[in-house]
Image (cartoon, rainbow, N blue to C red; front, side, top):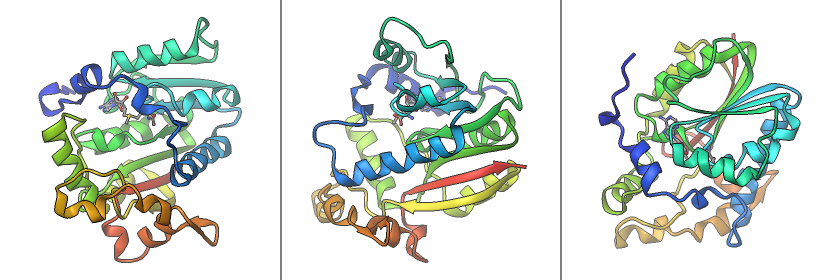
Length: 259
Ligand SMILES: C[S@@+](CC[C@H](N)C(=O)[O-])C[C@H]1O[C@@H](n2cnc3c(N)ncnc32)[C@H](O)[C@@H]1O
């Protein structure tokens, strides 16, 4: 299938406007909220990926893969930005681990053979992919039967969509391609993936930006409050999971199993 880049400016944007440093996980200004998101993603990788063959789709500079690759039997990282992959290799130092393979490729046409992976994961990326259902179908294609997919999609009816589109137009950050919640569930079903877990986050964007009249809602300091834990889960997740608020929450994390 032809995947023309004119429907997607993001490869060019990631190759030119980003340094790779934006993707570091543990920056000095990291907040409890961010730590908790990182912790729960890494916990999922350990739970489903230890001793397994794993693919990180849209791996970027490998922020997540590099934390865990020692745990995996074999790991593959795929990203369409040559620059991000170069930063990834540089961060690894002199020697490429023998169980790690990095490939340049589009998430909608993954350069990996069918039914070869035990775990496919994709964090903080698929909401930058147009026609993302193609990427979800690819995740399913490369998974072995019984294999697990862990990925995040972005909700088009969230405040974050408005803020991200505006930031793309004004500051040239990556262009968002968000989809509705019903569309997310539909594409998972159509890819023959069974939904095991569905968690929702980011009722508010929490990264600043937006017009000044929206600033009270977009302010990053909401993370202080929404990062508080209530019964083992962050207040943000508690609120974002409530019906009907989950239809307005941005980040939807799915754990699925290939039939
Ligand atoms: C925000 S970064 C996240 C990187 C990494 N997953 C992480 O959590 O640190 C998004 C990454 O997705 C990649 N990306 C976006 N669209 C892609 C596509 N269609 N195919 C492959 N990679 C893509 C970008 O090049 C970038 O490295």
